[in-house]
Length: 248
Ligand code: PGA
Image (tube, rainbow, N blue to C red; front, side, top):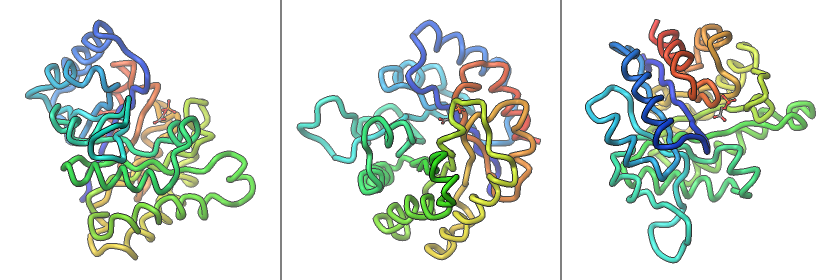
């Protein structure tokens, strides 16, 4: 019903030459997709990626957006600027932004608003740290993070994508088990249902060391609607194999 959504998060990786090679390998191997797919590239490469992806089934995404519309915010990139490059998705509130840049739930909610008002689908990242999981706080943490976004965005909430990314699984090689992921996704689905009559159409994707070895089991869970993929998205063969798994 929702179909799968597979999104590569390149993080701060790439160069003009490396991006061209990676995208050309992905596009050459992609064939017909029966899932939706996107790559979120570093901001300086949006123009390059827009050109290379034009006419393809792979959507363009960004990794962050400013919480402000325009003005004296040195170094920031606005939602309207992203729209100039036909950006379709934007990651918001990634744990690396929350952790290294002190992004709060309120800032994340404001960024979601900016993206939505520019017609860009925000991919809202949520997830608990290892110490929060060990303290039994997983549910409380992700619910608090999602509640801030719901509160600020009201009925528009059905237009977002949610990415559950346990912080302890990102880039570590540790993955949430399919049961652990499903459990949290079901909690998030229930929270979305309570907030919107259209909650069923919100994709809830999983992120955190997703790769060829674990994707099929994760994607088989009823509330896992796709993946947000870091490391494996930088290798064309592995990314393509994930797209194939999601298309089954
Ligand atoms: P990873 O990153 O797949 O390398 O764990 C996922 C993410 O941070 O979005």
